[in-house]
Image 1 (cartoon, rainbow, N blue to C red):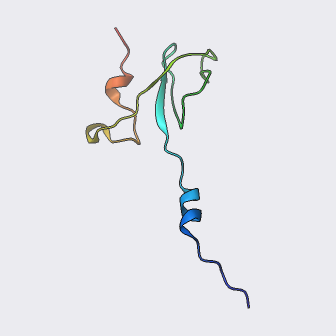
Image 2 (cartoon, rainbow, N blue to C red; image 1 turned 135 degrees about the vertical axis):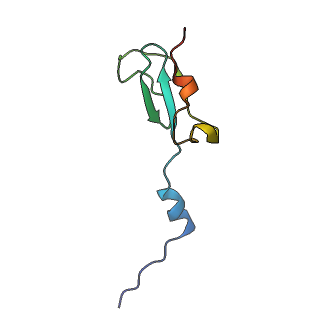
Image 3 (cartoon, rainbow, N blue to C red; image 1 turned 90 degrees about the vertical axis):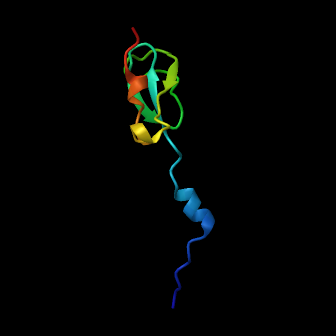
Length: 75
């Protein structure tokens, strides 16, 4: 008779997803969610600077959402 292995703490931790942030392209304004900013923008295909626009306050929904104040276009 075979026995099932009990999951260990390490295997449970390995299954957790890496936290992802919201990133906004400085050139075209494209917003994406990733663990780190990409080297080139998936939209405009340029090597751009990316700004972390993740929401870090409960008022805008927390880290699962981008911060609407940071998504506004610059004037």
